[in-house]
Image: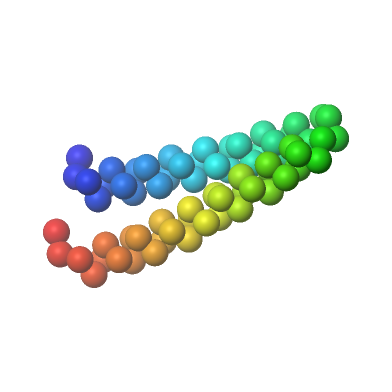
Length: 67
């Protein structure tokens, strides 16, 4: 597996974990009503969105590069 392919894979896995953490925190907020869980949910979902944007930027950058 090349370094580029591993980087794309790592971005994908990180995005899934970030969204998973955000959803888990949201469920925890609904269960307990803790404001900190809501803050963590917002952070997790925002991190997932940022990782999607970075992944799209990285894939566009890869298209312009030669292998």
